[in-house]
Image (cartoon, rainbow, N blue to C red; front, side, top):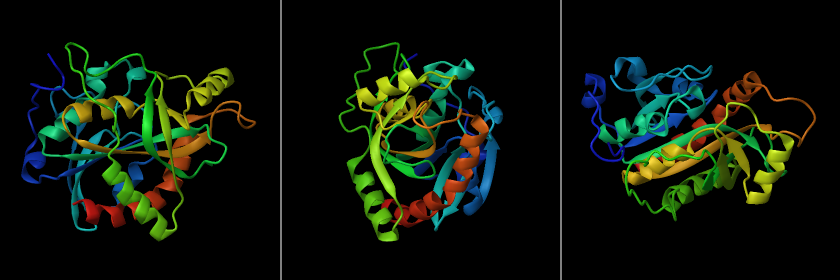
Length: 265
């Protein structure tokens, strides 16, 4: 089956009754963003037949119908990953469900390691482009030739750029590289990724972007820079550090998101 075309989910009543044009996927440690929203209801991934379930700390594994600043949102609080053993088609099922629910603009967030000396942990980077280093695609199974010349919407990026400048919130812009994981990268790999042009490194988002663009959704992507890439600073990498930094940095993104949503709705 072509994952970009004929799949349909049995939609829970909640997702049918309160449509939202804007969807958000929250990455590791960023689930606390939901606490700033007016929640209308939620449904677990496990309650939707055919949808894989998160098993990673920092990923609650549910869809939340909410409003932020009066704008209706469909929020995926967590995601699944290739490194958990899922296929590319399975890790992007969340995107296909959101499109089926009526979402036409998708905001993807992730926790990432910074490879750019000017982008410090605790700050945010808006994705301008990506490197798919996972070795796979959610569009496998057919001649699904999707143009990714502007994978991340220039229009949405400009809105966020203007809002960040007005609020005085640092918002870097750069290239995100996605690997398979689950191990963190070696210092040698980090040097390679920097040479390839990556500013941040993670284990998600890129496949969701490919799937979303195949379905005609506009996409914006944001990395919460939670740590330095291996070898760039002394010390070791730990997932608990990643999620803790994500929680601390969520406040700035909530403010940025709330002010920008009104211009996108």
